[in-house]
Amino acid sequence: MDEEPQKAGLGAKSKQDKDTAGTGDHNRSAVFGWVLYDWANSAFATTVMAGFFPLYFKNYISAGMKATESTAYLGWANALGAVLIALSAPMLGAISDASCTKKRFVAIFSGIGILSTIMLAWIPQGGALLASIIYALASLGFAGSISFYDSLLPGITTQDNVDMVSASGYAWGYLGGGLLFGINVLMYQRPSFFGLSSAIEAVQYAFISVGLWWAIFSIPLFVFVREPLTYMKQPLPLLRSIGRAMHELSGTFSRVRNFKMTALFLLAFFLYNDGVGTTIKMAVDYGLSIGIGAGDLIGALLLVQFIGFPAALIMGKIAKRFSPKTGIYICIVVYLVVIAFAAKMSSGKEFYVLAALIGLVQGGIQSLSRSFYARLTPKDRSGEFFGLYNLLGKFSGILGPIMVGQIGLLSGNSRIGIISISLLFLAGGIILSRCRV
Image (cartoon, rainbow, N blue to C red):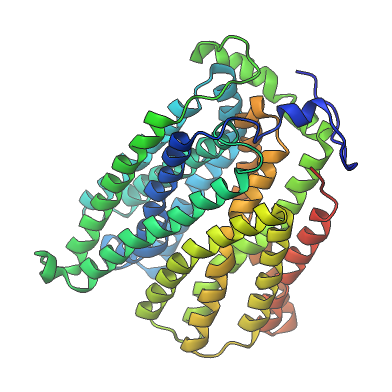
C-alpha cells in the first residue's frame, strides 16, 4: 500500500482518508462484544495490579523477607511484563496484520493472563521468586491482549461513532473492574461472611474470581467481533507471516514519518500520557507520605472507578459534539488543576477530592487518545500501528517520576517536584494543537 502524507487543510481528501480507522460498519453486536472485553479484563487492573497483589506479596508471600528485598522482587515483576510487551508489541502487531490473527492473539494473551492470575492463589508462602514470575506473566497477558484488542477498534464502527465506542469501552471497564473489586474488598474485610477463614484466603479467592470473570466476559468478543481485513490480499499462514512481518516492521517508522500527523500525535501522546502515568503512580505514594491509611487508599481507588464510568461516557459525548481534541484539552486542564491541588494537599479528605478529580478525566483522556489515534492510522495496518502506540504507552510514566524525584531533590521541596509534572501536560497539549485529521 502506498501511503500519502497527511494533509491538514480543511476538506482535504487523500487515500489515507479512505484507509484510516473508523471507516468500517457500525456493528452493534461487535461493539457490544468489544466493549465487554474491557469490562472483563479491567478486573485484573483493579483487584490484582492496583489492589491486592502488592498487599498479598508484601504481607504473605514475602513475609520475613527484608522490605527492600521484597520491593525489589515486586519492582522487577512489574517491569518485566511491561518491557516484554513494549518491545514485542510492534512485531506481534505486524504479524497479526499479515496473518489476520488479531483475535487469535487476544485469545493467546488472555489465556496467559487468566491462567497466571488464577495460579497466584496457589503460590506458597515464601515463594517470592515464583510469585514474581507468575505475576509478570499475568501482567504480560493483560497488556498484550489490550494491544490487539485496541487494534480491533477501527473495524467495528464508523468515524462518527469511534469516540463514543472507545469511551464506552473505558467506561464499562471502570464499572466492571470497580464492581468486582468492591466485592473482593468486602471479602477481604469480612471473610467470615463469605465462609472464608481469613483475609489471606479471601485474597486468594479474589484472584480466582478475577480469572473466571475475565474468561467469561471475554466470550462475546470472540463470538461477535469479526477479524478485520489487512493490507494482505490473502492472509499468510502464521509461521510465514513472521518473515513477512519482519520485513514490514523495518518500514514501520518510515511509514509513521509519512503519516506526519500520526507521528506528531504519538509525540504529544507520549508526553501528556507520561504525565497521566506519573500522576497515577505518585498519587498513592504521596497519600502514604501524608499519613493516609490503607483503607482510605482502597476507598479512593474505588471512588476513581465509579466516577470514571459516567465521566468516560460524558467525554465521549463531548468528543462527538465537538472533537476528541477538545475532550483531551479539557482533560489536560483538569490534570493541571489536580497537580496544583496535590501540591497543597495535606489531609485525607483532600485526597478523596484528588481521587474524584482524577476519576473525572483518567478514562476520558485514555479513551479519546485511542479514538483520535484510530483516525490517524491506516485501517489495514492497525495491528502494526497500535503496537507502536502501545509501545509508547508502556514507556509512559518513566520521565515524569524522574523529574519529580530529581527536581524535588535539587530544590529541597517535594511539592515543587510534583508541580514539574505540569510541564509534560503543557508540552503534550501544545504539540497536540498542531495535529489535524
